[in-house]
Amino acid sequence: MNTPLKLSLFGLGLAAVFAASYGAGHRAGPSPAAADDTHVSPTAHGGHNPAPATTAAPAVPGGLQTAQDGYRLQPLTAALSTGSPAPLRLAVLGPDGKPVTGYTPTHDKDLHLIAVRRDLTGFQHVHPTLGADGVWQIDLKAPAAGQYRLFADFQPAGRDRPLTLGVDLPAAGDYRPQPLPSPGRTATVDGYTVTLGGDLVPGTSSKLTLTVARDGKPVTDLQPYLAAYGHLVALRDGDLAYLHVHPDGEPGDGRTTAGPQIVFHAEVPSDGAYRLFLDFQHAGAVRTAAFTAVAGQTPPAPAVPAPAPSASPHGHEGGH
Image (tube, rainbow, N blue to C red):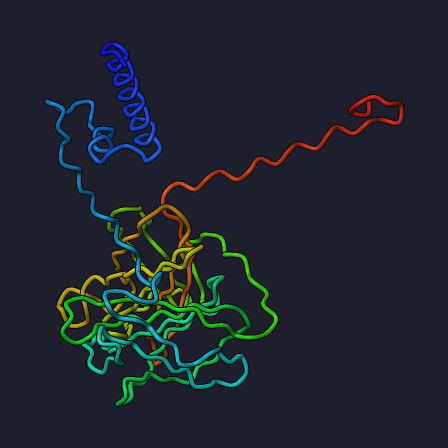
C-alpha cells in the first residue's frame, strides 16, 4: 500500500474515533465542568461562577410535623372515644428513642395538649399527667366523630426552646364536617362577650387585644390562667399550623391588669383564615371564646352569573 493511501486511511480512522467520542459525550450528558458552565451568571466576570447565594429555609410552623430535632410524638392510643371519656395515652420520644421524662415548664405546665377536629371544631386544651415511664395520660372524649389533630406543646429539659409536634387520631362514627365560621369581632360564651381588636398581618408581629365583658359590664377581676390572664391558640385553616401567641406581661408584673383587656402578640406566616381560641378564667371556671380572623388580602368571591332574561309569552325578552 502506498504512503498517500495509508495516510488517507489513518485520517479517516481518526475522524471516526472523534465522531464516536462526540456522540458518546452527548449521550452521557455534559461533563461536570460543562454543567457548571451552564449556571454561570451573565454578570460574572472572567468566566468564574460566583458563590451560590445561601437562602435560609423558612421556618416550618409548629404542629405540622410529628417529629423534629430528634423528638417524636408517639400516640399509644389508636382512636378517640365519642362516648364516655376514655384514657388517651401518648409519649414524647427523645433523640435516644426513649420516652422523655424531664421537662421545663412553660406557662405553668410541662405539656399542653390541644385536641381539635380537622374542621377546627371541638377545640379542647388539656394537661395530661406524666407517669414515671414517660407516658402521658388523660381521660378525653371527642365531642363528635371525625379526624382530630393532637398538638403537644412542650420543652424538654436541657433544651433552650419549646417544641410543638402534632399527630392525627380518628374518632369513629358519622363524620359531618362544619364550615369555617365567618370572620367576626365578637364571641359569646356562658354569658361573657369577648371583643377582638387588632388585625393579623402576615410576616410580622400583630398586636391583638381581647376585651372581656359580662352582662354588658367590663370584667376587671380575671383570674390568672397558665401564668397569664388568658391563653391564646391560633390555628391556620387548611393545614392547622399551630402558631405561638405570646401574652403581653404576666400577673403581678406591675403593669398588667386583670381585665377587661388581654393583650397578645401573634405572628402569622401567610395570608389566609385563622381560628383563634382564647382561654380565660373568671369566677373559678375556664372558658373558651373562638374567633375567625383573616390575615392579608383574601381573594374576591367568585362572580355569580346574572340570570338569563326570561322570555315573554310572545317570545320577547323582558316581558315587553
